[in-house]
Length: 253
Image (cartoon, rainbow, N blue to C red; front, side, top):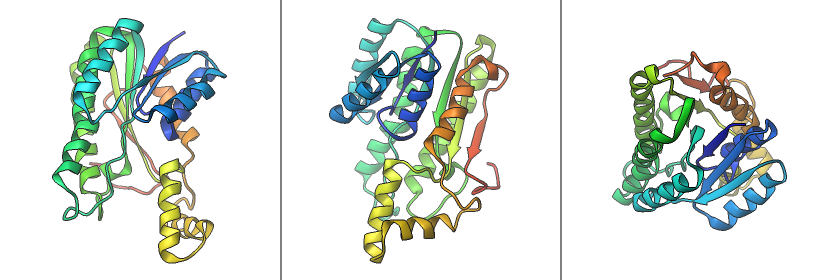
């Protein structure tokens, strides 16, 4: 059947991944820090297949440690893990606080290290771990210092683990999506439209015109690729960070 733990599975890309796994008769466990949002998402997913939820605040390492221990006691083993942590705040370097940096470091790189360490012994043969990163891995910019720094750290972790565990047939890969039409993106568009005193649709259209493909990515498109990376169809693919951005970034790191 297959069982997958999907971090950040209560909305956006993570939820789309969970839906696709369920549609292919897999079992999923989704995590999130907002309990109401998490429970609502899980109720929706349960209508498709076997889904359960686990409330985790990835920025609180003590909470992560406790919840993953409980997860292991209940589920014993898994076939794959999707690391889809919260997006770091979009702030200039000067306006970002040390609290911003500390929480974001915990919720991206350190929580990932902790979870992978704890779950290594629970991974079934030929398991796959997929990191959801960002186009900021390949293109730095204003208000992206936290995101770029930490996504690059995760990419480095992914590549290192891919080499270290290749002989154990545990695969590590990543996807770096470009602008994707998630709830977070819709919120940013709404705020941008208010600041410019224009409609949401006009702001979105203006932004979309700046993209090479002239379109936003749908979360379901990313889910398709993640599902492929989780499956045994990609058994020879490891250590790769795949740009999924409609041509937005051109130069690999």
